[in-house]
Amino acid sequence: MKHKILRQQDLTDLIAVVVGTRPGIIKMCPIIRELSRRGDDHLVIHTGQHYSHEMDRALFLDLDLPYPTYHLESPRHCRLHGEQTAEMLKGVEQVLLEARPKLVLVCGDANTNLAAGLAARKLRITVGHVEAGLRSYDWSMPEEHNRVILDHLSELLFAPTLRAARSLLDDGVRGRIYVTGNTIVDAVRQNLEIARKKSQILKQLALEPQGYVLCTVHREENVDVEERLESLVRGLEIASRELGALVVFPVHPRTRQRLEGMKRPLEGSEVLRLIDPLGYLDFLAVLADARLVLTDSGGIQEESCVLQVPCVTLRDNTERPETLDVGANLLAGVRPQRIIEAARTMLARSRNWDNPFGDGTAARQIVHASLEALTAPEPPLADDEQRRGLVETLAEERSPHPAEDR
Image (cartoon, rainbow, N blue to C red; front, side, top):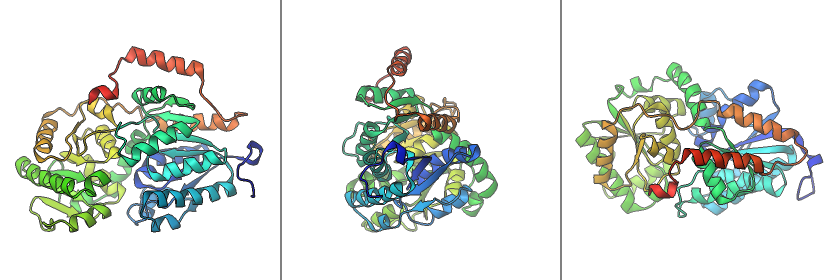
């Protein structure tokens, strides 16, 4: 097709689901399953942002998902944010021109989603942002740029919580807002059952339930700043000794590269057990039976909350403040003493907090709203009556504003 944009009459009644990272695949898998269950026409585009076997093909096999209809290869060679985003933007645009879906669904805040959202917007294809409205209020984070931009260019905004919906209203977005819950609840409930049947990882690693602490570290602000990474590692080692628990540390490839460059090697540590990245089902099994999780991952903050596993976040802020509100999580940053204090506090808490992310029907609600958008004569925009209802609901909730928590 030679046109730079697509007209409504050029488009087909097709939903394109875009993935490219492991967290994105996990959160979109309930939506893919729901579309398949209903027999609705859809395709899956993989941008290639994550490309290792553990973070890509093995995940589709583990989850019994069909492999994506389209898989971009060139982004795997890109190192810089702009280069990677541009390559994915170009690749997704070419796929959209060929497939001509009427709606593109993206999830989260990775470069994958920004690239796909921009490609669709430029072609005048409706964009639905799953997990809209999350805010860390930390403009130094690349993820914060991506999620804010995506919220402003999307017509369908699927907010996981009322708090996220309020952020969207405060930002003055133009799209239509739906409070659906978070698909992570759907995913954990569906996939933990699979993990319990398939995974033998605790036996393979000789781990006893509640006998270890799980740790993950991958964010740029932690692993690419030598002083922060060294401080974080010291905190992990001291916490392990004081808590009397082994820290099991599946190491992200970029994190391993940075750790190998440290002055003090960690291989062979008596208190930190460094292992290769785990497949998703194995990781879910290890997470579910952990005594505590120490992480800088947003998705793991949510998963641990749903699984009733205490969490300490190795960051100074979070775009998942709901986990703080219900008592499932504490912010610790990377200072050793603060990590230890937060770990002790979380271990002393009862694991009886409420799940703030919905009842496990998010995928069903998102698919329903998406199919309604497909049949609409024009792309959906903000609905004043719907927004007034949200404002009234939020006023009744009177929950604290994210900025007031910090």
